[in-house]
Image 1 (cartoon, rainbow, N blue to C red):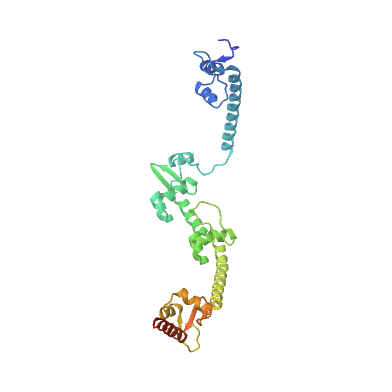
Image 2: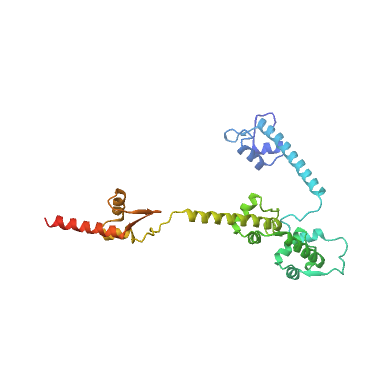
Length: 302
């Protein structure tokens, strides 16, 4: 078919551009190639748009290849670091296998013995092996260097003297575990970055924060005690009289508590407010009860 024609079929577009038909189909779906409605067996793809898209597609592929090559060069030039995620332990140890045989005098431990020496789980030992914190070899099973275990024990002991977990920091400060993030935001506690399983709070900052926290607690207690002293009391007056509550007065007078309160505020029933409670002298309540009874009998005897 001469290329000068305006419309081409999908197979002809693939042959002209050297690009697979599924890729061309995707370009049609995203409107990168112009397509006309099908008319029998006539070609449906616009040749100009096909050629334009093919040129753009080749430029994109070349750019991706250049970026991929540059990334590989950077990775090769980068110094050896911890093994990337996704590799198995066998691949990691195979990549780190020395060119010469290991020293036979070196003490080698199993993963179980290394876990007992480090007082941790076997998965933690394998995690340190993957991260490069422990030297290991693969000979039928994983063997961990005893010297690297000893170095890690010394490093962990020194680390525990300088850094503590958030739970231990809460005990040192004397606060709850939930207060630790707030103290970190305030700058009272120093936290180092790192994995969650590693202690990250500076012990020195925790000791300093404990003094600040104790001062805050003492200040809060003093304020609370001051509020208690200045708070109006609900106790009855201590003047030798017998005082009753509005509930008792309501039962004696045959009223509701609201009715007693209305009479106190209106001044028809003497009462004293103490804090948020009304108190009435029993003598006044008995007099008011007698007056109500006299009035009731007089009205009913008419």
